[in-house]
Length: 343
Image (cartoon, rainbow, N blue to C red):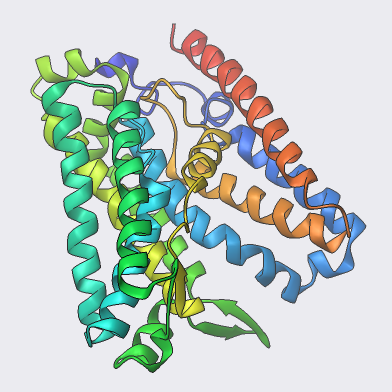
């Protein structure tokens, strides 16, 4: 990628810079969805209602931000959803069946998750197989392991009893507790989500690694030609997604104190959809962490807003499909406009 092709450093006016921002469509969608539900439901716009819809947005947002980085780097990870379940199962199984301290069990889960992310990245970069195929294989293998191992150990598809494990109270306070703001309880996961978004944004916009991510996603061959460590960058991105999966899996395990063997299956598509709504292109090289976070907020508002209005929850799927189509079309138009501005 040449410097002239990088929209972050192209000399354009302020208005045009705002118009070509990848998260512009998501911001418009956020305002529209909020105004709609807030006008229909007083509960939705109350502090308790905001805390309610920010909760699902937080866990989804942590994953969406990591998946967005990977998509900007030109790759997908279909094993991200099931890996959250694997991380949670490792934590609860080790702490309740093998006597591990919760913190130690979480550390083991982190090592396993990072190892899976490293393996995904290594296979993709060494074999040049599409990441869609590689991570689909990982998805199926993890799904089988989660079910097989859980049934072998517990005789059921669920592991429970984490509340009685040593170190639970401390870990629960850090990862799954609540904080009081203005008399309303907000989940700590929201803080982890904000931190993840801030760090990812800094990496993308202010660090050399951010240049490498945009470069390998935009044109990998050109990036290699100018000395960008493409393989190392992609492996790091897969490991970042795995880290996010471990964090979300641990948060959910500590919150519910039990884990189903099939948890997380299907969520990988939700993460990708949130990133696309936030402005990430499926072709790589374009997008933002803030946009992915906003995409997660839209999901959270729709998820809880439909419940507040007393609608059938089946309409949530319709909403997802409509948002995906609108976001993809909007992103395409914005990208075309951005390319015209640069020329």
